[in-house]
Length: 165
Image 1 (cartoon, helix red, strand yellow):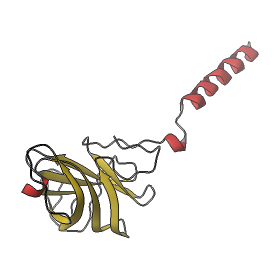
Image 2 (tube, one colour; image 1 turned 90 degrees about the vertical axis):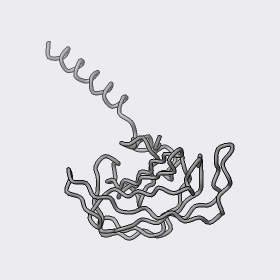
Image 3 (cartoon, rainbow, N blue to C red; image 1 turned 180 degrees about the vertical axis):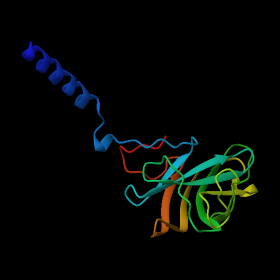
Image 4 (cartoon, rainbow, N blue to C red; image 1 turned 45 degrees about the vertical axis):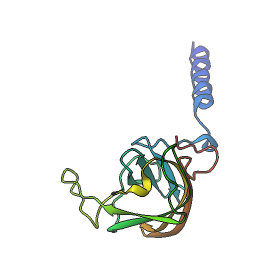
């Protein structure tokens, strides 16, 4: 009887190991359905959510697993854009455009501008935008400073296999 129990437990363990994703297949799922930009290996993420009809971009600063909000002490985030692709009927914006996202407070979480995880910009520069190459100019998260963090939108910048969408 003990041999049967051990064999059954061994089979369950093999199934569990086989079903578990390897680190190379580790996936982050953006909680707001946006695009993830990784900051350092597994240190933090910025999720970008674009509403091209309104020309509105929201950035959420998240932890290394892209699951929880991380407050930062900033009043603005700045993005530089290039190779902007717009839908039909929209003018091509000037190359080298900059977008400044303002810190947003939240009464429910107690976040305030200058101590928040959410930033927003609404500008005609983003109206009709489908894709672009971007860079976060400067950002400090959890004591680490990041400058010129480049990414593609909507693909993001996570290493192959990490997946963001």
